[in-house]
Length: 264
Image 1 (spheres, helix red, strand yellow):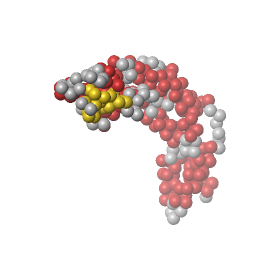
Image 2 (cartoon, rainbow, N blue to C red):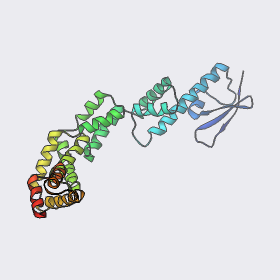
Image 3 (cartoon, one colour):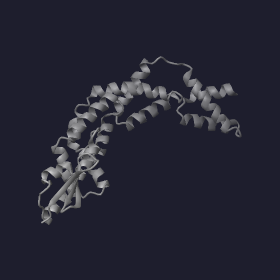
Image 4 (spheres, one colour):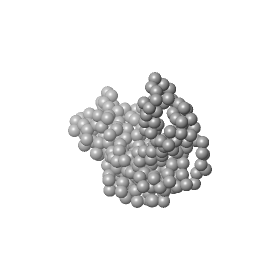
């Protein structure tokens, strides 16, 4: 029966070379070494050797998953995807995920709760945006719903107050109407409630210091560009093309008519 005659430590911490009958046989993780008592003098039959190799393969998958989960929270699904990418079988992946859960390395409920708390603090995602991100991470829907209870209405309103101000200022080069549309679209994409978005925009407009010249300056710039584009046209056709272009950009047609009269 093959006998362990020598055990040497590799340069990699926690890895050991096993020699049977003075010939290199295989390498194992320290956990496998201890579990199967792979020290000098231990006798192994072929079945035991195959069991050890299988345990080593499992431990390798576990170690890789552990490294992936270290330093950043991961979900069960993310671990499963990573191991699948590395070619591991489904049965082994389930075993590794179970071990990580049992060892409290991963915890989908804690992941969801932490993600919701961080999203609230950052204020860049609304509840539906958070829900979508958690679904992408593979979190169970019931866990998501439980975690989202902590994302209260006041949290969303507070986030929108900041986001609306930032986005409207960013979109100030557009017409007032278009700036609001772009702001609304962006916030919808980020998962905020439509009615709350509209209310936040309305509140911002009520409290902002009105710049009487901004809308006109934006119109003047865009109208000049449109006028140059349609310079080959004249009369009614020219005016209609300019007006159509500016209407699509959200400008009030009375203001557009004023610009055209001044141009004439």
